[in-house]
Image (cartoon, helix red, strand yellow):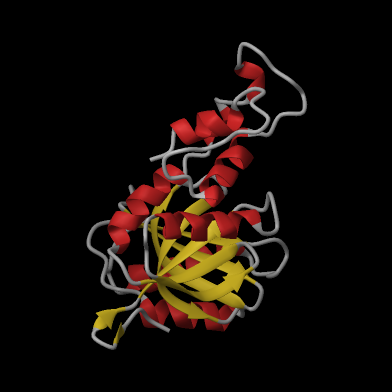
Length: 221
């Protein structure tokens, strides 16, 4: 399927490539962040490791904010097409939905868990062959990253809109603080729970040990 026009508006599908740190928190965090931004959206597909949403607002503006706010998402993808998980189905959805690319590009194929036995490096070369054969770009020094995500019985193909800088949370681990208690939450988890709580003006931290919740609220954008 392609992004298309429906009822007088453009359907923009965004795929959120979720972390595997928890079964439900990553998807809940995405939805809570959208709700806190008064974003009008619908769930298109909820898959293992991937949440696909139909965004009815200005997607680019929403993406810019989410890239700074989310903690349990790896990448945000503008979906160009969704197909099956077989090799021919993957190549078909790419060939059908691949736009004309100005400049250079890169291709990455990613498996979620063990849902696919596809050789990702071989698939990247085959997908690249479409563009090289049709002179849509060269793989060197890419300026247009495209991504294929394989999960359950689906392949999700699209532009990589951005990646969350999760390393920033590693730099704020509790043991780097002046005081530390072994039972504290890790920064990514604390940030995700702050996002899910959708604080407006105030956030009450009932534990107030190493101030993990409060510090993550202070970094909220």
